[in-house]
Length: 253
Ligand code: NDP
Ligand code: 8X3
Image (cartoon, rainbow, N blue to C red; front, side):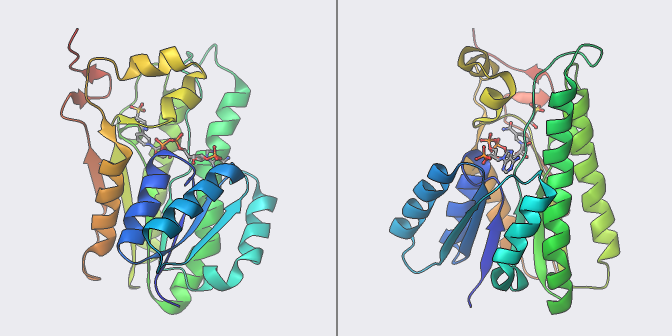
């Protein structure tokens, strides 16, 4: 069947760029996200650039356990042979203080960033165990190591991604399955637009500094996946040069 990679949240940003990077390494791509038209655009782009790789797409909400289960059933033959799972779908909502923020935003972040990642991992990893082979790459964040004001719940979800990556690695010890947690700082994608729902506020996040690009992270993921089977890059913190720490950014005025 050739090598297959399943990438969640491939309709934009890091997920989209990772689909291109892994296709460039000869992986056929199963790409997911909620926006069907973006998945169709990605499929067209992949087929034009990498005619020899397979491309399949599925539009569903990763935070919905029923939708994930339907997806896993519909793509059971691909899932049974999945070589790489990139758990990338995720988001932040708002920067309100915890005493003021919306329960809906909390639920969206927790359901997507933690539960969605768990539903997908559970559905794929049991097949990797049967084949004693596979690589799971999780998108954590520097927010999974350091907390910042207004980021408490988003940070908690990324702290969870770190714990889940560690726990899974421990449970899989003795197998050939690798688990990597990628922890980027500021990456210019749709992330801030989704967080603020306001393009002026989103643009301000990256004003006067050079953030990472989605491609920077995608190339890093592709590099981790391409290491020899006995090498597991467990965790990688990647900041832009203009960022020393969460909230500590050098900006030219
Ligand atoms: P984008 O907003 O550009 O991409 C997020 C992706 O997640 C989209 O494809 C979106 O697809 C998908 N997604 C969100 N919610 C759902 C859902 N309920 N069901 C299915 N798919 C969903 O952001 P990034 O590329 O920056 O983010 C990718 C990951 O990287 C996230 O986990 C984020 O937390 C993490 N990260 C980002 C950083 C940054 O500064 N940008 C830094 C550190 C980590 P759709 O809308 O079509 O459903
Ligand atoms: C995204 C990076 O610093 O905005 O995870 O939380 S940050």
